[in-house]
Length: 415
Ligand SMILES: Cc1ncc(COP(=O)(O)O)c(C=O)c1O
Image (cartoon, rainbow, N blue to C red; front, side, top):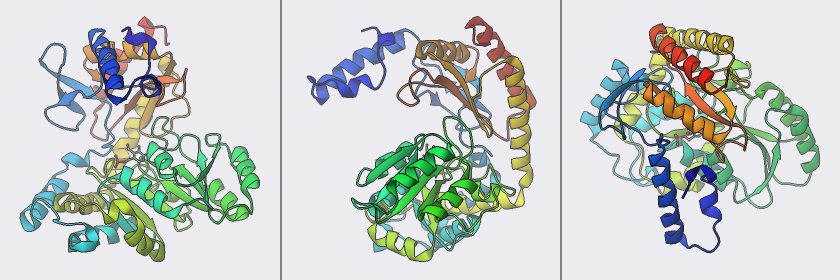
């Protein structure tokens, strides 16, 4: 099979092959991807997230030291001495697991402390924590919205939100387009029990910011609620890193603030912050909370420390932003198309899937770790490489990446 003629979307559409048949065909596809040296997924790290990552090269078997431009660990809190110490202390005190689901014995005082910290961090009354951000978005939406409700979605919201809306009606508006949102709101007016507008604060494949201030105004005018997914915004935007509501000075005005602990907060898990009555409802109706064992003590301990570090060490976020400004200025000077990127996520939009695979292969060989993002993860003809930078990248790391990108950009006529 020639993998260049197929995308990941194709293997779910084959009608005359059952699941094992589809798996066999997919294996043929993966083998061809590997032979063409396009296999840039599931690269194995031997030392975890940092500005330089040591990676096992699938093709040579050797260890490569790569400039790592694919982490969501924007402040590199995964490796901060305080998050490590707090995680170790929690592990010693409570053991390696919580032992049960939160409702039936798994709730630790450490979880309550984390919930209170999150609520405060997000300027909300209360918060509920989950073991994954995906589960928290998906589970909350599945439990809140049913057949007489509607979710009004930015067309680029995260997959966890799309999956969470499978029990309800949906209407999409054009990405970050307030006219399109208003049009959608006029269409659904008075027709549904709950109208919930859902957006990402920072979009994961584009790095742009939702117009949350305008969205909140429109919601008010049309009797809708607003939910924002703060996955890539927490710790990055806002005067003190509290995310999109703080960025627009509208803290306390967003009905549901969702987020993950897996990106700038440097661990794993997710949360919803909102009015306390809604959080209490979720304790008893949100299935990934009720039927899944509580977060590990080590994660909860590390996360409490992460939020303290964000508060006490603003210099980390300042360093991240000076890196963002430097990297962006140089990429634009080189002539790359970055779309509307304005945060720590940098898409280089190339268009053609095959070209993106080739560029990523070349960059891998030059010790630069970036991710290919292809259809169906992004619309057809908008394939891109996705990079993200961290506070701990030095100017030398960024220059090494910029030099390689310049060489490859010229080779493939991207700049
Ligand atoms: C915008 C957005 N929301 C939610 C998630 C899910 O978060 P988690 O990785 O904690 O499951 C992600 C993660 O990739 C994301 O990018």
